Length: 286
Image (cartoon, rainbow, N blue to C red; front, side, top):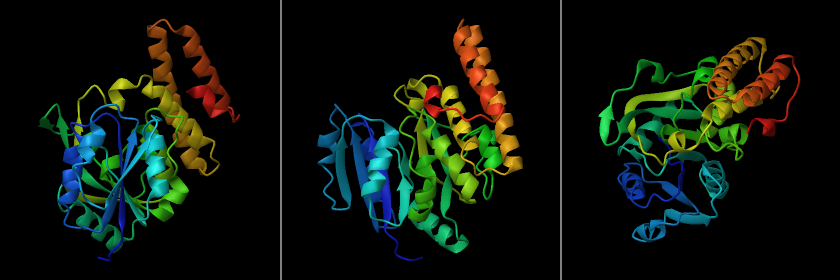
């Protein structure tokens, strides 16, 4: 393994009680050539005082007004120095050999984007993953259309890959990772270290999946975006259009059940334009 500098991008917002576990897991890494860019996205709790207890020159603190996780990650990556970029959410953790094993795997196999397997913790208890959430390796753009198959805290990518797949879409308050990983899977095969080296915590009310409404609409935006990028071949275009039709149908049905007929018709009409080959502005979907 070479001595690549790994830039770890760690956005946080009002997680003073959680961020220490994430940082402590970095300090325990067997691979020590890293920097951690912490982007405090406008926290109003005790986050800054918690971070003052960490006296390590590799940890860099950046404060910005609250702009969301996409803007925070983009800020961190714009300031980092490494040619290898790793993402870590402030409520997740890494096992000690995560960086060492993942970097070795990427170098050995030649991957520009790579993730590890993960352990799921929900409300403090370990849970088993359903088979449909199993992580694949290689080229899996079509499979990634149905659901997000890459977890941010599991992932390392090269700066070269970031220049193609980035930045995160700041107009998307959720599903921003689904959006970016679609671009990644279109361009690159994705590596998988088949070991559970990341601990992913969930089940709390402050997580984006629980506190941001209309996730289905943001997924629809991501699909329209990839369809309009001009880089899909005929087969990929057909696959993406089929998944878009399915997700629009689900969203439309949900709106109708809640008495939101106008919204159902609005999104359906937008879908019909996309289906007919017309370009629509993405801002009409969020």
